[in-house]
Length: 171
Image (cartoon, rainbow, N blue to C red; front, side):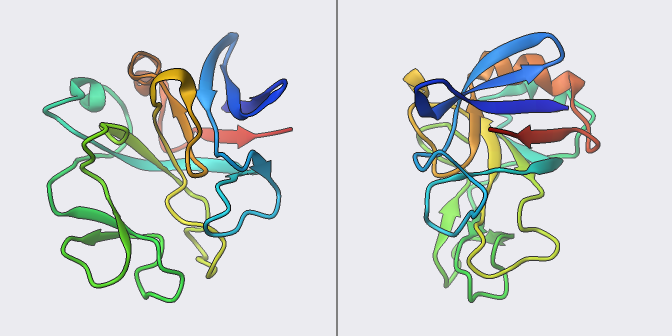
């Protein structure tokens, strides 16, 4: 169990507790919300299981040091973010006709990217897509709704994580 809460006085930054250890993390620019909607920038107030992950083998070699199913990120991997598309909140092959996120990013945020089970089964239109546990920008600037940690924290946590791990976002 990983427990995430907002840092007091900073709704888009958080504290992630793994056992007795606490790490800094970034949250969505919309803070934590029980009513998550597509595009609101909020991190869902929820318990979300880690399903699997993606990693850049050329940038984040620790991506193989885990019990999670991890897939290398190729240049044609995307994630659909259009609520009316049949592949909403699913990986897609780029080029793709509907709006999507590119998983192989220049800013390296997804060099290690774990998929949380938010709005996966069942998928509901407009409830939010691509809620990931990924790498943070310097200074823990806000995400679009994901939970993000430093590369060092991710490398430390990955060997401890499995598809039974739950990320619990609380207030």
